[in-house]
Image 1 (cartoon, rainbow, N blue to C red):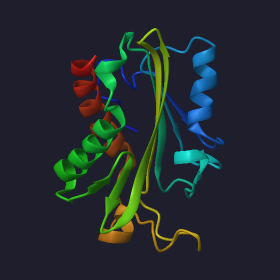
Image 2 (cartoon, helix red, strand yellow):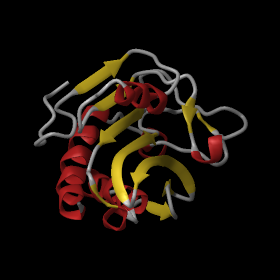
Image 3 (cartoon, rainbow, N blue to C red):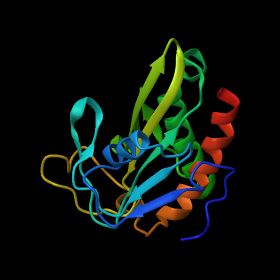
Image 4 (cartoon, helix red, strand yellow):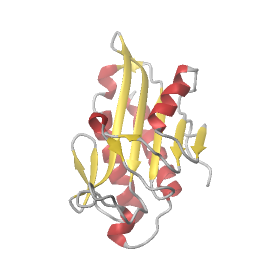
Length: 187
C-alpha cells in the first residue's frame, strides 16, 4: 500500500487481516488513549455494523471497510451534518477518480444504479455541547461480485457495475485527503 497523503488522518493506520468490526475495534483503542486521526482498515470484517444495528456484509479482501477516530474538541453545531458530508465526499472522490456518478440516500447510504454501494456509521461522544470523540465507520463495496441471497437485489459494487478491478487503497487515500481538508474547515 502506498503511504497515506494527509496531515494527520490515517498517518496512524492499522491494517487488520480480520476483525469482527473496525468500529468496535477502534472504539476499544480509543478507550486506551488512541490518538486523533487513527484509521483502522480490515481486509475481512466478520460482523460489520450497519445502520440501526444491522450487519454490514463484506467479502474478504474485496471491499473497503474502515473506521476513523477523531477528537475535534469543537462545538457540536460544527459537525451537525458530518454523515452527509462523508457521503458527499465519497460521491466526489469516485467521480473525480473514475468519472462515475453516485447518489446519496440520506443520511448515510451511497447508491449506484439504484443499489447500495456503501454505508456510513457515525458515533459521537459529546460533553456539554463539545464533541470529544467521533468514530466514523465506512463500508464501500469495491470488488465484490457476488452478494448473499438476502441482499443481492439491493447491493452492488464498483466491479459489478463496471466490470473491472479497483484499487481500494487508492480510493482510501483520496477519500482521506478530501475528508481531512473538509473536516478541518468544519471544526
